[in-house]
Image (cartoon, rainbow, N blue to C red; front, side, top):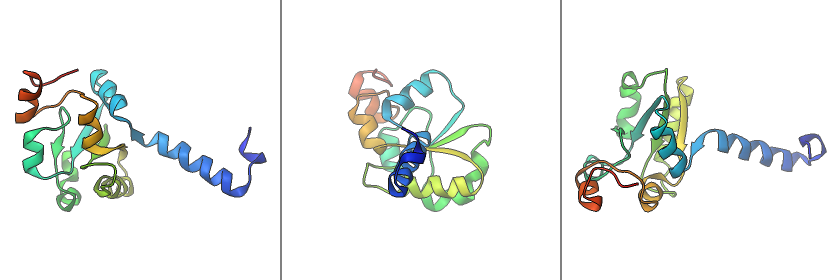
Length: 138
């Protein structure tokens, strides 16, 4: 079915969901992107205390409030991947919007840290070591 045969509302929905898929990673997709050494700058927007306990491998901890002043830490040759606490947290969406408006390639981690950790994917940090006996699981 082409979008020409869709109602205006259905066409808008199709465009929205297509764009959504283009600008987010699921937890497993991010794991594979990291494993494949894709050019990423991963940004954890959670508190420093939670970041220290565990975070996605290679992530930088930058608060949303500091992000605009910290864009020099993000290479424009990479895709910035932002995440916050969970699916109901909008910090990552706000951060993605801010970075997109500044010209960065950006994706959001769908479900945030909670979904990534719940999938038992690799983590770094103090609690990640005790979780698996090493610094990563899967």
